[in-house]
Image 1 (spheres, rainbow, N blue to C red):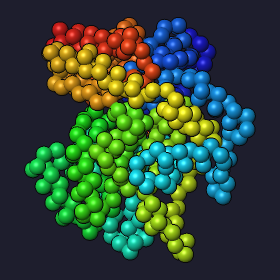
Image 2 (image 1 turned 120 degrees about the vertical axis):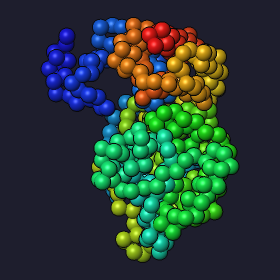
Image 3 (image 1 turned 45 degrees about the vertical axis):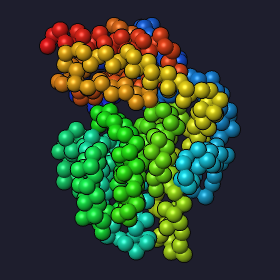
Length: 422
Ligand SMILES: *Cc1c(COP(=O)(O)O)cnc(C)c1O
């Protein structure tokens, strides 16, 4: 084993990992296109795009050149009182790309913080408008919005870390996704009952990601937006996972013709190269912070916000969406997932198969042995990481049909082998 590996492993703490029982992590030395290369020379096709970030695959030359050029000029400068070209270009491009008058961009460095900023904005929006009692947030079952305290309080109580940290988190209001008439009446009633203390509703449009790849239709999303408008509650769209083409449109909200008051972006924003997030608001939200009163300003500012390298990467990523046919690739991936993943329904132990854009999820009726699954996937030459009972594929958009076929075949194999053992 390499020196850095033997020495370092005793000092690293891995995410979501029981460090006593987990197998050693796999050392990666390089990545190219849809493939990750391990230190021992083996290659794995990445079925989940490094937690949904690497939409153009790894080491896209256009992003590399942009980051290198930016590195030579200005890697970073603080963003208070100072600005720079990559951030301003990016802000203007995001404003042009996003629907409606979502036009004012606040940069941060992670998705959770982008959501925290959205929550602060929503609460202070009402305070600035003379309604300081509007502070509560409505979130949905199966939702996931991050790992920090305020965002944990908005994650599914059954799946998230609610129980562990109950008492340390703000108390928010959970709703069911209003997918039918009865649930729509219930949701309407919920907003009506709490309207005086509600600041915002937060939703992952069309696909709830880390909470289990649950999918809802555009009509449900449109209903949520309409109900928010009727009851005077802001709508926050958490498009950290769905943004930048994943569901088939550039942003999932577009499919329902919804313009949320605030939208959160991250994951694929830089094409998986550097950490960056953005909270973007409509004009009227920003306007509520304009005042002679200094206390009406938004008091937030991460040290590395609007990092110039990350903004350069994001601009290069947007170039690729303009010049390469990403959305057509997503449509082709969706068709192939339908053809190759749907048949998994027939396998014993499979409860559901859900497909939307470049997302294919297989939900099982029981849990998966994560360690055994990883071992088998590596043998099959693929990299997957399920959560709970959901095994899913979210490949880079540049995945080739043959690579995607290898991924779907691997899912099929591990499920069939599991069914035999049931
Ligand atoms: C990943 C994710 C987050 C959190 O982003 P981090 O960068 O991990 O903090 C929030 N919301 C959604 C929908 C996500 O998928």
